[in-house]
Image 1 (cartoon, rainbow, N blue to C red):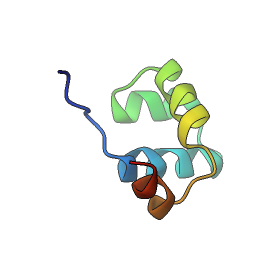
Image 2: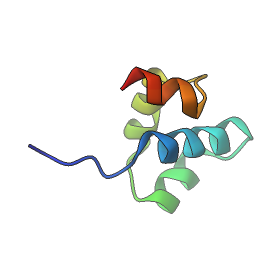
Image 3: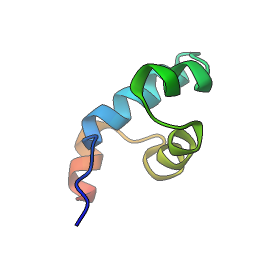
Length: 57
């Protein structure tokens, strides 16, 4: 089984940067993921806090 590279906390931190106004392309390059991955994360974790993400698990 493939291991996840990013924890929920890290994903939410990236999404907070995106909400603060950072461009998707810049975030993708900075964190080493594709732009599509960021959009998938936004669909799954958008609007969540860290505690809510932990409860999701």
